[in-house]
Length: 391
Image 1 (tube, rainbow, N blue to C red):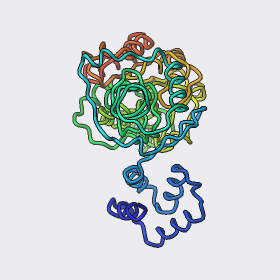
Image 2 (tube, rainbow, N blue to C red):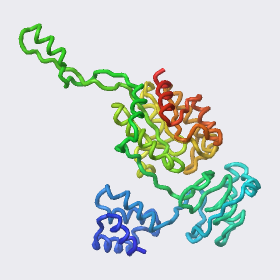
Image 3 (cartoon, one colour):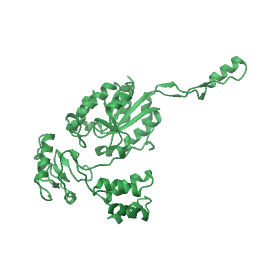
Image 4 (cartoon, helix red, strand yellow):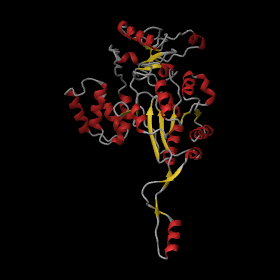
């Protein structure tokens, strides 16, 4: 397995050497990784990656070669053997079968039942409606179907109905250097322009120089500050999960805002804004910004644009502990209310076609929390959103 890992890294363009590989083997013999997947990840990355530009390549190879899980914590301490989590079958149910499957009765009931299953289950299970396994209708496991479940050991979302995800997922930062497919996005954003001249006088004032020279009879050079867009923008991007379907449109928007606004800050969140956001997705568990700090750092005259499909479990918005990836002390609705109260000029851009919004309950909930200020991520939607921000 380790030799395969080494050859896969070389094939992916990561410049690893035999000496570095042997160093990693010596570190494993010394038990520096403590037999934990996460510790082995950081140990191997520190040993084999010499340039941060190769970290993304390393992460992709690592995820391909070592497909494992890490424990969720918070009292769920039973170990789940990795072989349980292999994809043995893909089960698609008929519409009649799906209608017969009932939700577990709320988030707390779901987690309580999961703890009970972990304590009772003694072996691997495939199919069925109760145990943790694959290709069944149980609320716990992978590659089956349930309207409200805990996803365990599945490569990616299929039905997008999980209320908790046990796997550790890696997200990538958006590329703000992507070439736009159309410059009309930039034109729509220009409704937010408010030009001003501030800062050091480092630009030649040609008209002032001509007038001064004519008046004084000798060359009188005038300088002035550079003219720039004085509007200040805060961008929040939903990243990962169902937003993977909208990466191209989101990157185009990100690239356009980079060129249009001098004063712009961006942050990432997943599904709903909670008590913390982050700037880099590869460091989203270690380098975070408390949302309270953000609300007290950027003044209320900032224009706020939140970009996301708002497709999530309703518990993520309405319930304490409802977040799909961590335990949130306060519901997402509480944090959205704080953001909109702090920044009166605030809109939500949704890349999902507006005709489909009514099919997802969470979209209606977010739209209501935003006071109806949700717009589709289209040229017309952008134009309406910018008009709202300049009111």
